[in-house]
Amino acid sequence: MKSKSGSSPSDGSVSGRAWLMLALATVGFAVNFWAWALLSPLGPRFKDSLDLTSFEQSLLVAVPVVVGSLGRIPVGALTDRFGGRVMFPIVSAVTIVPVLYLGLAGHSSLAALLIGGFFLGIGGTAFAVGVPLVNAWFPPERRGLAIGVFGAGMGGTAISALTTVKLVDANSMSTPFLITAAVLAVYAVAAALLLRDAPGRTVPTEPLARRLAATARLPITWQASALYAVAFGGYVAFSVYLPTYLKTGYGLTQADAANRMAGFVLLAVAMRPMGGWLSDRLGPVRVLAGSLAVVVAGAVVQSFTLPLAPVGTIAFLAMAAALGAGSGATFALVALRTPANQVGSVTGVVGAAGGLGGFLPPLVMGSLYGAYESYAIGLALLAIVAAAALAFTLTGVRAAAEGGERKSRTGRRRGHGTTAGTTA
Image 1: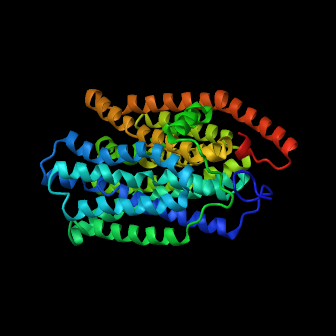
Image 2 (image 1 turned 90 degrees about the vertical axis):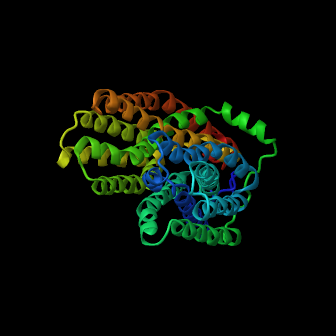
Image 3 (image 1 turned 30 degrees about the horizontal axis):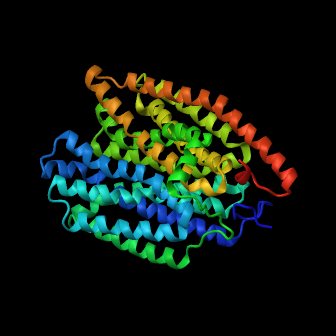
């Protein structure tokens, strides 16, 4: 018997087709994030070639990220309405246009780069397409793992970081953009031919504005947004600022700092599915609480700027693992606590909060270092924010989750088979 969400049966079994859809969605997420992150590795090069100020360089990198984060809100709502089968090929195909523009003509001036970067942000909205698609294919007790696996597609940013500059040095400025555009085109065609929405998917009928207003009234929207701004926002912040921190605070070379940042990113990416898997077994609230506690401890330890070997390295890797697991647990919570026909809308808002949450910390860290020549205060502030999120998780979020579980059990007794994902 199908659940009302259109997911797999509530007995926990998952079809091979569901796993195929998960694989296709994860690849699409990674490819679009690869495109979304193309400008960041080239920021220093553009600064030198176009004589940009530090602010202009920051703006160049920030524009696609901000657009991609905010764009998740309408794209998530559109995915609820039209489904991932329609939206994934569209987002991937549309992203090809700014990628080609930037590679062939749009890198000769700051204005051209900003225009291209604005539309490049479309690639960052793919996250809000994949979560509702995957959510509908899996039963509630398997959604944490499934959405965690999908979330590992954020490693597409690592592909860009590791290959873009090397391809430019070996060939020309257009090379990484042309390769990425070709991969996007292949994926768009494959998605159009192979991707399918879950049978019996719930399709909302209300207008977009009304659905977004309804999403804003859901408590889980703002609970998950706050938690994701800390968990995924912390990941984004470190992935952006960690090379600068290591170079300035410890005197590492740019190459060494970049390699250590790559290790941080890869561990966080690997831990995201683990956070989802643990959430399926222990509950997302427990995983979130444990993750945030580790972040608090790591930030407190690192605020003393202890030697990198071994204490500093352990602290950073522990925070990377915790931020990755916490990100996975946040969307396990979303999957369990969101009505089936609003998962895309909620994902859009929560994803936007996570993306935007990563940009304030680097600005604060840079400003504080400029004023005090120390990162201690910035890391202490991270510990305070994570501690506040931990307290919120153990009080408001836990109470809401327990209330949802009680309603779900009541609904199953009355309806004989209603799932948690449709009664939350």
